[in-house]
Length: 378
Image (tube, rainbow, N blue to C red; front, side, top):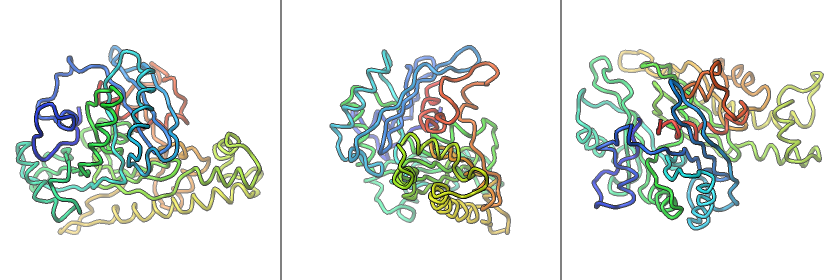
């Protein structure tokens, strides 16, 4: 099980933040209660429960609930009471399940990689991270919560490579409070990119370096994943909602028709003739492609002291509801000159030869974060 965000000091017993962040003595798997993966964005709450089934896993339940504008803004909770009420409504759909894993917004995260001596103890690594914070992030250790994942235990004589995630303590505490107010026991918090990585990365000990692109409603998140661990994240305020609004206004169509236009026609105009709709989509696609190209080239061409490539990105993986725009993957692949695809978010849940999840492929791309969170509990 991947760790949760950890406080830099041990808070008093019973403290809600301590319970959410503690990982020093993980609960044995047999004693872990069933839990949901709950993904909170500015626009909605998505949740899913995944349970073991023989040698595989199954989806027990899932759902999505819209959030009114202003409750969560760029990942920051502006109305804790309203979000707690929405989570209470989600809890009624969870039945007997009252525990959850949740994600913190990438907008507020500071993600980086570093090396520590091999076989360092957990507490030693945390102290080394604290020493690094002053030069890496613009918040003090006392105002931060942070954690790490091991990327490579033995990195050619330079030690153990770890991926570090740092969040403002106040932001993390606000998420803990709303879950507590909703009566949901929060088992862990982690950055969205880590959840997505758990869903779309292979279980191989050494996986490829990938650039994940989470194309959402109001923003797009980028993350460089090394062996399934985020070493960099960023977000841009470019999403699919403005596309839909422009399509609705220009073509005089409904929101549902706008979604259908994006998914069925998108960047590939019928009969090869560009329409006003395809031009609208192309403008946003071009912005996304520019951002992908910038991130891809920077990380793909980095060199170490020996002149060796250190983060050769192999592929671009598109998730999020707007990753379904027809022709988008091919458009980005051509611009970036790199393989670009929509990954199988169920690869670490089941084999389609044995089980077909109750969420269609297009919709499942919206559940990548929730799926990754739910996998923490199985």
